[in-house]
Length: 105
Image (tube, rainbow, N blue to C red; front, top):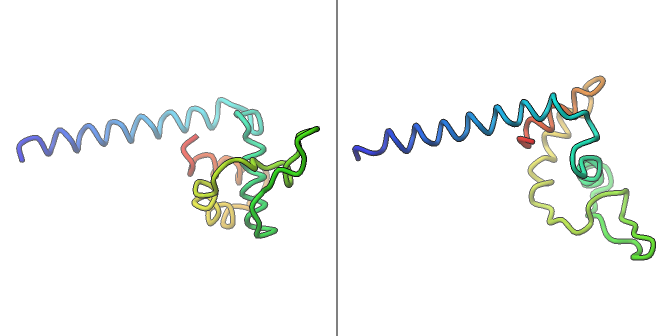
């Protein structure tokens, strides 16, 4: 039991660093310019607005439903779904920034 405080302290340091890196990323990288960011947002929008998973429409040329990542599993996007539903009415770029912050990057 003597080492419990060390584990707690280590956990807090890791969480704090992850949050700081997420904040730095959120404001250093322009919206839409993160790796596949638009495709991730399209996935969440597709789930909420059309209630369907994306599929690969054609291989040549490559095409996916609504430009969303068709080969990604839905769990990550299902976790983001309620946050997107709450934030989508916000003005300007606030919705993207808040969704980035919730997803920590």
